[in-house]
Length: 189
Image 1 (cartoon, rainbow, N blue to C red):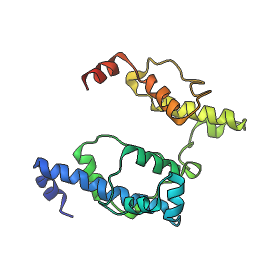
Image 2 (spheres, helix red, strand yellow; image 1 turned 60 degrees about the vertical axis):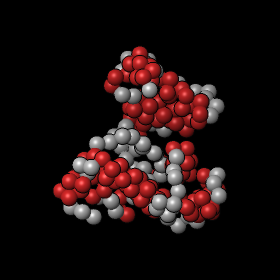
Image 3 (cartoon, helix red, strand yellow; image 1 turned 120 degrees about the vertical axis):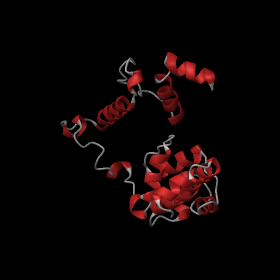
Image 4 (cartoon, one colour; image 1 turned 90 degrees about the horizontal axis):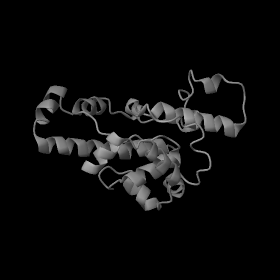
């Protein structure tokens, strides 16, 4: 890999920037998926994701598969981990690329995430019914994720009650972000 200064110099060309972004996705994701799979077979991952084993094999080979968001969401669900997709500054991507290592690929699944409830009221509360604790955790996580610009949103207590599917939950969450500012942004797109 070129030095940071050489990389920054190369990134002055738009074509190089586009290729650099693409390479980080096309190389990084397959390696991380393979590392997350660990000792699980490709066949087992295929069953968990509803894909065929040859598709999983192609996904794990850098540059062999085009990954769309739905595929990534299915893989994240199979590993019971979060998926973050967002735009970033090139400085952040360079930092990430410089620290690209199998040591950084490990992501604990939800039940093994020791940082999840660290310092939270849920972790310190007296035992409750599992469904009530789950509802509190979901509501708390959602409230923590609401951006400051949406601070005027009503509290979301019970917002997830009665939802029938992941899709309806996603629609419900997205509707919470429907502010005049966001509607104006969507109209421009």
